Image 1 (cartoon, rainbow, N blue to C red):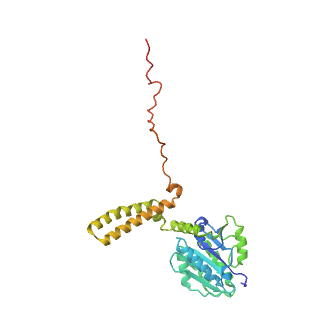
Image 2 (image 1 turned 120 degrees about the horizontal axis):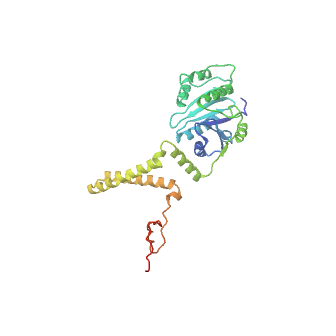
Image 3 (image 1 turned 90 degrees about the horizontal axis):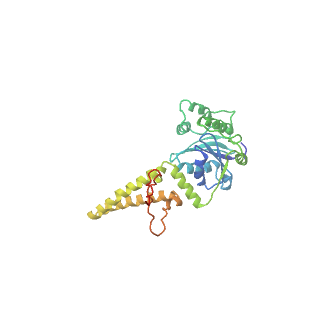
Length: 303
């Protein structure tokens, strides 16, 4: 690779609609493009590795880690520059996994990284892992770009389908132009703290803790905490037990916060809508059941 072919791609194992809220948290201008069933790819519009003076691998590794911490899907960063190429896989709070090839294709990573990579993507260690072993061996005819292209082709086993022209080794400017014309491409950029906080809440609610923060399960948990906290606090007050009183107050506060959060996140229209009252005045008497003409009494005769 030459000095101008510096770039990166962020592959997310989720649909674009799921990736979009999390991508806002990076506070970077990105292009979001579908990359196969259940996959999306984020293409940087800028060049932060040049503006900030940090290596491209360190920049995208930080992005991948920041994305993966608050979600339940892995993020795979592919990166390359004039001297090296490689990948970084981030998944939750677990340690990131990566591999590096020098410009001439020399592998400098650990074989264990490839095993961990296949395991975290849910690939078969017997059928899929042997296909990665050639990338860990010396090959004088393959440079770093060839290695990364072979690795990107291997990702098709996990369902990744990168659009034509959106592959490793291309300059960042070309990646940006190709991503803009892809079907379903959309721009993701920093929109202020309010939208960022809302996006972060959406990410948390879509994660494993989401059902306990909002929805029927959250309301049930909040009501249960109140039901347990109120009698516990009253009992502690009669016994003059400060410890149990604190525990009861904590349960009450947690239950109230859970119910309040669920109500507020439901939206102002749903959270604060009240039934309409009848105007002042005497209430109308409900009409009696309608009678069919056949059973109505006949008019009385005057004779």
